[in-house]
Image 1 (tube, rainbow, N blue to C red):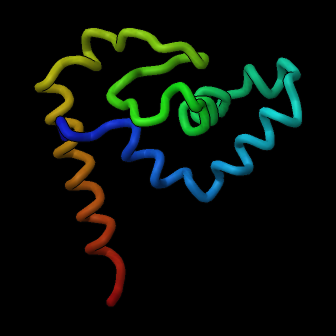
Image 2 (tube, one colour):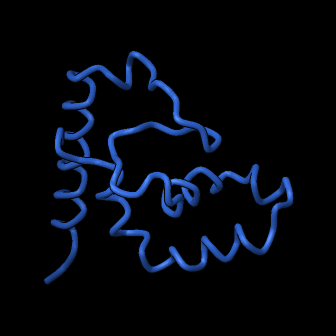
Amino acid sequence: MSGSTISDAQAVVLSWNFCARAVFAWSSSPEVVNSKTATTVYCATAAELEGLGGMYFNNCCRCLPSAEARNELTATALWELSERLIREQLGRRSP
């Protein structure tokens, strides 16, 4: 978990990276900039974030995560819960 960065997420968004750039180029309206997806799109497409990771963004601005978000015990518990839930879901699928 400690090796995870925003770069890990970038692999997932490559398929829609072009579309996200097109949205920002197409519209500078407040509806697009203030939408719930704006921060995700910004982090996935901003040239100034290329190669960086491990940062928290809110409303397209870099922020300090809450104390709870920085708590290693909470992070470990969440990671373990996520793994367990994924294993359970995968186990429910028929071969």
